[in-house]
Amino acid sequence: MYIILVYDIEEKRVSKMLKLCRRYLHWIQNSVFEGELSPVQLKELIFEAELIMDARKDSLIIFKTRQEKWLEKQVIGKEKNEIDNVL
Image (tube, rainbow, N blue to C red):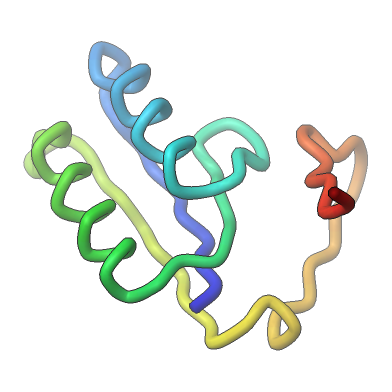
């Protein structure tokens, strides 16, 4: 499944969350990631994120779609991190 993940984490935990998300997804811009994950990978990511987060102060939002082709993305202004899909 294709995932867009957005987080709002207290500053002292941001670097841990950033490192975690970069292990699973592509960084798009501040606190925003996207990429293809299996259901197991998504469960792992959520489990690890919950260990980092303080649920009373922090939030994690995950948007899911079956495939990237079902998502239309429009970027206005500078693309912060262009994903290079060419190997």
